[in-house]
Image 1 (cartoon, rainbow, N blue to C red):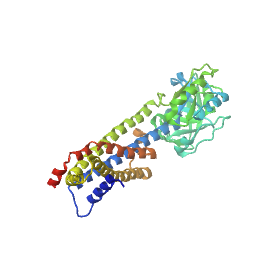
Image 2: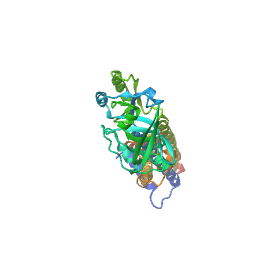
Image 3: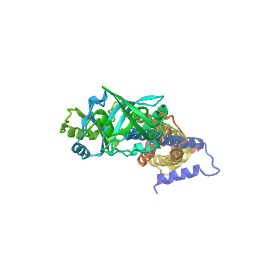
Image 4: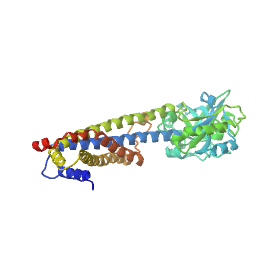
Length: 418
């Protein structure tokens, strides 16, 4: 064992020896609590921010997709600008790097009407290729329909918001009206009711059969409003766009549609929501900086008090041959031991709060404002390790300059003072 580490351990154990209360005890306690509270706040802040981002991004991508292939003019009227998606074209998209799923979607605006109420809706037509895992998880009543690629079905899935507005439940029948040159009417059966808590979806979209929506639009079986694509990693969505655009440049749409690829980060329908949750990264960065500053300042004050309290000891050690560097290293090791205890306490507090929220969710939210009904938390092992190592490194780094106070202690004066 090196001399500085041995000396630091002696300082650390003598500081906590029973019956030897020192004036530095309150300062060391404050420094320890400063590190503990700082780390706990950082852990909880990162967990909540990452939880929100994962939850909301998952809902947006789960209802839609990561990338959409569509005619850009369809934003004004999705039922007037179809694209042609032949099996060969879909196979080309499925073969692109990082693409995990490809599905067709058609849309049709209409009105759902009961005897007493009505609501403007958008039918979102899907088929058996549709990745319904997310929508199944959002079902609050009924079941997910079994759509067939070849025959039209009358089963629909509506949101809990629309169900409450129209007075419908699973098994109810409802009439839908579609206005073009003539009025078209269809009768649907509510097979399931979903709730995503995303108001832009819940107040508008009704899931229906792709073949039914295509017939209402007067489209062929190969046409659709857009092709939705899921990728392997949300963070690498933009990297997939060039390869998709290259594939589209080699594709000629029989309907002369101007087909383009658009990520959900660029989609005006989801852009504002995703930008809002991305702002959480800035908020977390501010919290991390403030908490590191708090931990650093409390440790600096604690270290200076420890040095001043041991001026006589420092003088004696210098008199018997200890160098300034050895004594600086000894006090830095002492600080590391104090910081380590603070980190242990901070981890216990922070991870404990995260675990309580994860398993029991005592903190609830208004889903109409926050898109979720509870505070979501998610902390990866890499973030946990980075926060612990970063706090230790930055706090010890902040103590390098104050540790030079040891060099100003003169052995003769210190021993005489002692």
